[in-house]
Image (cartoon, rainbow, N blue to C red):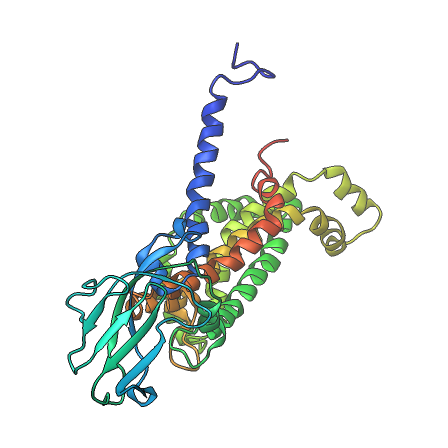
Length: 382
């Protein structure tokens, strides 16, 4: 009896468990990416993002004060100082004066310096260097410490990625270039497809059924088949590799889905509403702009989400059809690929760049997700 309408399905818990699993599978990596984008390189290298709220043990290479700061006390030259900054607190568990043995000494133990003299380091980072002869050189000796540092979060990664134009890791220009590609490539196919969908849904003309069949057939054509022929066509008519070319390419590749989705939704609208408007003397354009478009907003928003996400995350079409004034394809997806090659070890920069890349699609999706299901189910039931 569990399959009778109105009763609770026997496997309902499986559906709920699957949904929870998918949500966790999507949220956990995104949360990890967000947290990692606010962490320093040392923290990412020593502990996972799930331990970001707890102290972490790190190996640090520090340097004492320069010899010019030494003072003479009772015939002994002394240099004193603090290895950590005034605003940083840490607890040293072991330290050393050679990279070959970074944990040779415990706090409060004394080590012999290679250039003469001794050094003593305490657990809180205070040190004291003593020598019967004057310290020489331009810099103080390096001190290797293993210390437990408190959790630290910083906006420096976002400053470097978004605002610092002099940095090789900057993505500010790529961010605005991606917006320049995405916004027109989302609006143009919606405008064109809305007119076509209305004509296929409510206007009688010869060949309408064939056009609908052609639109459905174009849904299954891989866009990779059309890249090179379309690029040759663009070059032959003078469009070249620029914003206009990539807008038209995205418009063409997104048009079949847009027409199919909007046509199904518009065909499900009440026929009496359209006929009454025609009886009242409304033109087809007036019916389209004043009745159909407002009622079709869920379908328009649904396609806008898909088209925006596709164009924002696109790399292939941008690489083929877009070269900006600098001679490069400066969009965010291509910039992240370049960072993977040049900054493969800088996980804090990669995490920040990746989260910046997904932030705008997340905002668009959550702002319009209430229309998504209504648009996808358009025309499925009467």
